[in-house]
Image 1 (cartoon, rainbow, N blue to C red):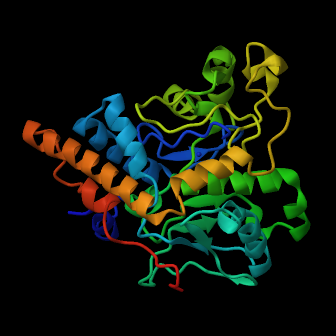
Image 2: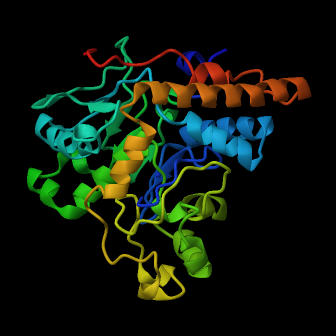
Image 3: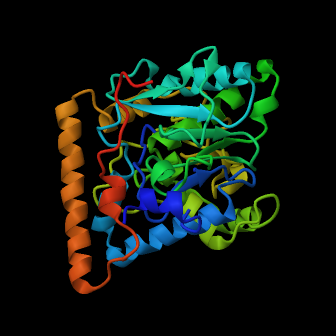
Length: 342
C-alpha cells in the first residue's frame, strides 16, 4: 500500500555555498538548534519509523545517497502549492514575499505558488487538492520537514513548516534581517536543503566543541538527547551526496555562539550573525536540483527510481522489506502540480 494513502486512513503512521542535499537517514526534518522546536512527538515517531524501515532495506552509504535523491520534488511538480494555517493575510503575504525569493527569479522548473499575492492561500484539509508546504505559526520553534516528506509522511491536516509566533507579529518585524533569515532558511528546507554545517564539504564537525554543545543542547530550552543533537549537528555521510564547496554565505548556515567551536570566532564555520540572503551558491544548488532542462530533470528522477527499486527488490528477496510501506509508490508516484493549476 502506498504510504501517501496509508497516512490518510491510519492516524498512527501519520531542520550552502556547500549545500548538501539531504541524506534521508537520519534527518527528515530540521529544526533550529538555538531553541526548542520540531514536529510533534507523534510525527517525529512516524518519521523515525519510516527511517528505520529504509535502514532495514539497506543501510549502506550508497543507499543513503539514493534515499537522499528521493526527497527531491519529482518533475511532475512544476510548482509547490503553499498554504497557511493561521496568520492574517498581511502577515502571510510578507512570509510569501520572502519565502518566494527561492524560486521567483531562479532558472528552475519548480516554483513556489502562494496563491493571490494580497490574499495567500489558506490551508483546507478537506480540499481534494494537495498543498505541499503547509505553514503554521502556533507550534514551538522554527522548523520544516525536508522536501517530499511533507506529503509522504504527513497528512494535509498537519503543518510541514512552522514559524513560531510570526502569525501575529507586527508587519514591521518582517523588515528585521533575522526574521528574513529564518523564513528563507525554513523554505530552503522545504525545497530539500540541509544545514550547511552538516555538509561533508565543511570542517564544522571537526571544529565543534562537542562537550560544550552536548551540555548546552541537552539543557533548556532544547532538552535534546544526544541522538537528536548528533542528527542536527553532525556531518552527513552518504555516497553520491551532492554538494558544493563550503559556503559561509549560505542562508542555510546557522550563526552559532563562538563557544560552540574549539577555536571560537576563529573557526572557519563561525559567522557572527545569520546570513540574510540566498547566496549565489544556494541559488545554483536549487537550479541544479530543479533544473530548467525538464528532460534532464526527468532523467535524474528515473535514474533515482531505478536505483531505489533495485534496493527494494533486493530487500524483498532477502526478506527485509517492510510490508506496510510502498516506498516506490510514495516517492515516485505520478502525483504533481501542473504549472497552470490553481
